[in-house]
Length: 96
Length: 386
Picture (cartoon, rainbow over the protein chains, first blue to last red):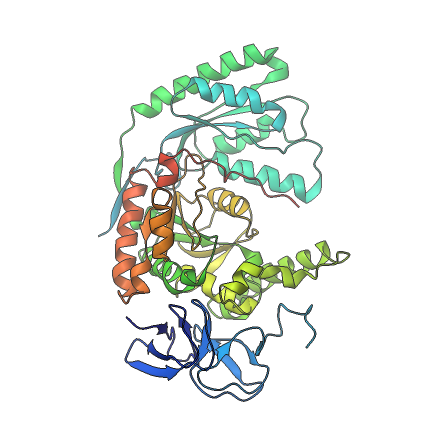
């Protein structure tokens, strides 16, 4: 069984189906094929892993839609969450 | 052709159940209503805390909610119980249900004399209706006569991966067959309004979707303007963030999966029924009870409720079908949950799990009890307020 799932072909992130360790190789099911990516940090079940290198302000795509933008440059295999994704909606309480 | 077994009604969609509803027009009539229902097998009392000293939109929402409930297809007939001095009169509620072609009886406590006389009369009414209802048998109806409510709660990472996509598949099949599906939880849609507006059947519906979600955002903003908590930050809970949800858009997208991929036919106001077939957006908040009550008050014969963390709740007289995409939750809360969609996470195609879910929904719509019904869960009846 794959350890992560790329939900939509347009996505540049995958969702972890189990907890993984830093440096672990993650099999990502994409619907068509299984791709491998090395995790650069520890990532928990349900969280997102970057599937490609992303520049700052580049859109982060999940479910085929933009869920936010990269706060900093993100490398393939990085954990994506509040520390490196910003969204113009919903977090005005957090200083940019 | 997919079908289900329902109870024919004089007007509108068939019922998935055949109960007698005892509805107080004001909370002062709750005890009388409850005792009437306790005496009659097949009767359900809908006790609530509203109907007194309300004004404006708040009172309007109460009247629309109770009227929408009263004409619901799952009820054979309704006994309306009033006190007498309330602004929303029992007569207005009874007349609206009569107009929907349903058997209705009404009693007003201050006119009957006292609690005992009111209960005696109510038991006579409800007992006669229950007897009539028992003579009715189920008939076969096509999927186009089904109206399904869509809800999620206790969301985790599997909701957007498995449970909501499986439900979305069911939604698409019902709408393609000419049936109805209704989604709501407008507070949870903030951030995805443009994505939803693109699915509208025409520009008028697109602007209705944008204004419904925009108004809800303004309402949340006004409600928290003077508080320390900034309104939008509250839309993602710490539990959502721990589970890997990072932005409001991500949360909204995971939720709207349950509304499938088809066009959105229109919006419905609280207590209103859709005018025709298709997928509709109901203007109601995300609170589990208020949202399910809103779906019922818009005529949904059953609700499918997706849950990652698991929840036991139910609605009296209307099946609330619990599905989870989390295998561990399914094992832990097995007696509360009707369906496990977790196979999708392990690689089973969405269409295969969706087809099993649709079959389950139609079996429950045809009389098989949902787990919430088996366990007597009835806490979801909750009239929305402003």
